[in-house]
Length: 310
Ligand SMILES: NC(=O)c1ccc[n+]([C@@H]2O[C@H](COP(=O)([O-])OP(=O)(O)OC[C@H]3O[C@@H](n4cnc5c(N)ncnc54)[C@H](O)[C@@H]3O)[C@@H](O)[C@H]2O)c1
Image 1 (tube, rainbow, N blue to C red):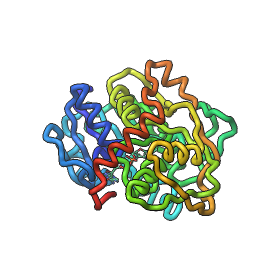
Image 2: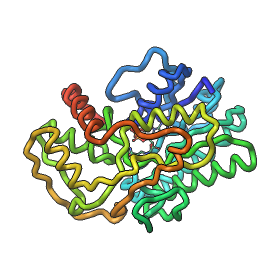
Image 3: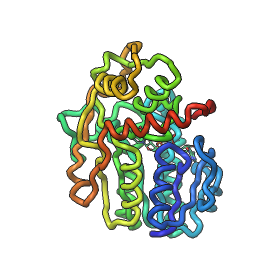
Image 4: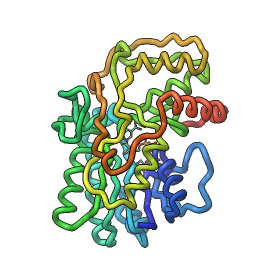
């Protein structure tokens, strides 16, 4: 599993997956519609520019690869509910087509970035195991679940090896300023620019944060390890939005006066992932939240001058 195609490899998480694969000695091709925002193309990576929704582009990108890491998404939870039809077309139909093209090209391994924060819907338990009912309340989550089912079907009928990583809330370097996903990156960028931060709701919602390089390392390991099925990937610990703001206040030594906006209906009140299953195969997050936030803050301060941020 040495030649790997990373779809969405110029994105926040994808760019770190590329780094982890290269560090493990893989040959990497990236399929993305855009270049990376924060760094120039890497000389050791073969880039294909285009949409994974195009059969012709997929055929070109899949040539000579052993495995695919699928990390592209055309939506986030908030935008997906504005146009579920576009979400289904851009992500579900395109991924089902990708599975067909992979079969025809003889590529039999996929690592898929699913979403631990949305596939379960409103959790029935404090800590959510992979066996928790799947009841998403956003189109984004519904499409992730549907892709997971298609992966299962592809394995049963056509022998695909796959790993689904249900990622919690990743944060870290290269998380964009205008990112509609990711409060840590969004808040730190705003504070670095002297802007006010906005909180949806009263700040009591709880999330599970995972440092992006820990997640990326797992994606690279999952390409090469003989593991199968769905795994939660988080820290296994919950932090409220208000706790994050307090940690940022201490870290940045700035005065922070958040603006509180009405809560959003698709935000579940609490989600913390049980990570026992992935720990049992030998992976555990390495980066403590405060250390990862400090690295994010340092990185942002080195990149403050960049205006055109995705
Ligand atoms: N960021 C999060 O909070 C989070 C949490 C859980 C899961 N995920 C999942 O992880 C994956 C990566 O997320 P991210 O935060 O890095 O997103 P991102 O937007 O930073 O990166 C996605 C990349 O995919 C590319 N892309 C989008 N549509 C494409 C298309 N049709 N063809 C080719 N490339 C396309 C984009 O140009 C971008 O470079 C997504 O599948 C997302 O659903 C993200």
